[in-house]
Image (cartoon, rainbow, N blue to C red):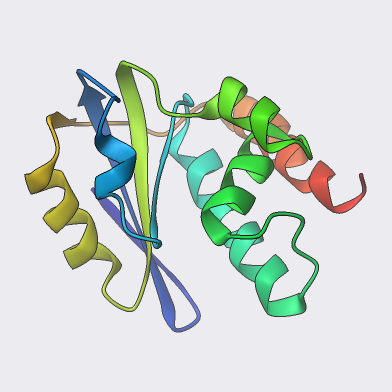
Length: 140
């Protein structure tokens, strides 16, 4: 698990091996999202951009969780974002944000049928492309 600080808000990220996505969304609180993407850096950047967009009132989605999906996918349509980066069986990232992000993430991990697995940094060039994709939502 990685924990980052964005001002007063903490962001906690874990990589999980998800067996089943059927009931998982009913369990997730408003400050936790699951993304099926390759790089944890993309999760962090998409979450920071989503939080900033709500602070500036430039958000495109109705919820921060939805905004994270839009940012991670680089699209403005929630259904397209879910198809592109929404939780799927296999390896996913789970992100929690807020004052108690780490505690919230650990609590959810204990309730869902998923195993936490280790993760590494992605290649810098790949991360750069993913950051550009996430930032695109501001100009679309």
